[in-house]
Image (cartoon, rainbow, N blue to C red; front, side, top):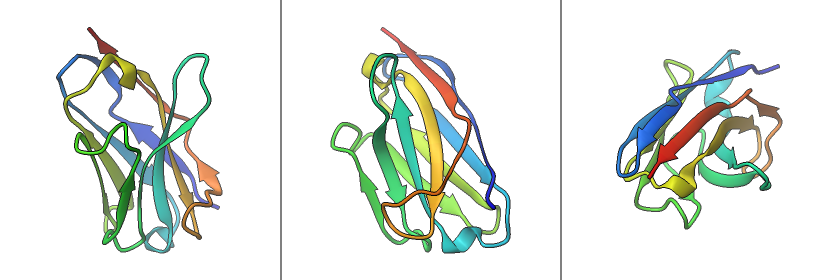
Length: 118
């Protein structure tokens, strides 16, 4: 069982930055792929970014490529999402997720709200 707790969300003006954190419980954190997803009001949840167990491979949605950076610290059981040049369309609840297989996520956090004002 893995428990995930996100933090770092908030209200920011367009062009600003935020860093989200996701703290994971469990001893096997370093074996899991980690991902960030988001869901805006009235929309389906969408993929944002993912990182391999070692941190050596990352992938991003086209909408955030070049602005967001995913990273992880396996010693701290934490994954991060650095978000720069934020846009109003980035407003959503952001969720982190973990899984043993790339692209397949078994555990989800409760989400953290990010609101970008214009």
